Length: 99
Image (tube, rainbow, N blue to C red; front, side, top):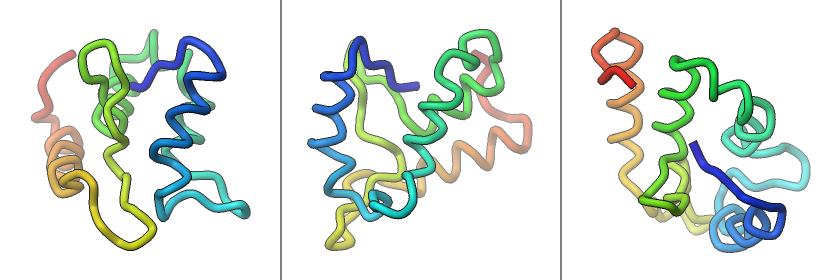
């Protein structure tokens, strides 16, 4: 799950990815960003939630990797979304690696 040490770090990430993503809208909050806002602290004590959120928004070393649902507004996938879908499918089937 993504981690931002402060608001500036979150704003930098939004400027780099979210503002260029088809899921960014003035009318509706991105569901991944919203999940981060709602469940960030809860996931620390819930392994199931932590596993799912980490699949959607992984860490890359000490940095936040690009969101698993990031698709540029011109329709280019910046990451293989099928991989995330397969991970979620495995998790749903109880085959995901234990965290």
